[in-house]
Every structure is written in structure tokens, then in C-alpha cells.
Length: 143
Image 1 (tube, rainbow, N blue to C red):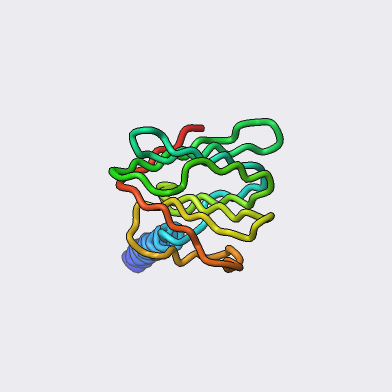
Image 2 (cartoon, helix red, strand yellow):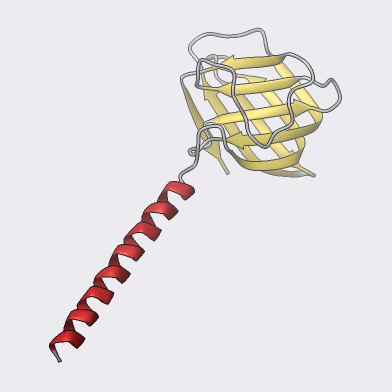
């Protein structure tokens, strides 16, 4: 009887340890890197510079507004308004803090970001021309 209880305790302990390792590896695999693409769609984008300096990108799929990405800025940039009829749009990051717009007509890439670097993106084809980076200090996403 004593050997049976010892065997039961050791098997329970080994199951607990195995479960703990499985959960730890799942948490590591599920964490999203900043350069990981969260959402991708094909559609139309309207980029507009607001009078106070922030940039507003409205993303449409067909005639339906999918979301609006707002990049708050302190200074204005030369980008005033862009209507992009054919675009691939990528939301990037764990908190959807970057928006990448590939204009399929002009082959330009627009990067709206709060980070002071060129984005290293996974699962996105490389830009065919120079990337136009628009920097800000915070982002908002309205669904």
C-alpha cells in the first residue's frame, strides 16, 4: 500500500510539472512581437491631415468602413490628403500601433508609426520603392 501511494504522488507531481512546462511554452509562443502583422486586408484608404497635425487614415473594404487609424502628431508633415483606391493594408504590433499602406497603383508604401525606426515587418512583401514614414507620439484605432 505504501508503494502505491508513493507511485500515485510521484505521477501526480510529474503531471503537474509537465502541465507547468506546457503552459510556459504556450505563453512564450503566443506572445506577439512588435513586427508581427495582426490584420491584413485589401481595399481603399483615405489619408487626411487634420488641422492640429494628426493623421487620420480611413480604411474601406468595398464600400464598408473597416476601421479608422489615427496617428497623433505634434508637427505637420507635407502629406495633406491621399486617396488610395487600390491598397494592401496591414495593422502591425501587439496593440496595433503601426499601420502599413501599400499603394498598388504607385507602388509607394506609407508607414504610420509611433516608433523612430523603419519597421521590420514579417509576412509582408518588401516595399518596391522608398517607404514614406509618418511619425507620431500615439495611435488610436476605431472599429
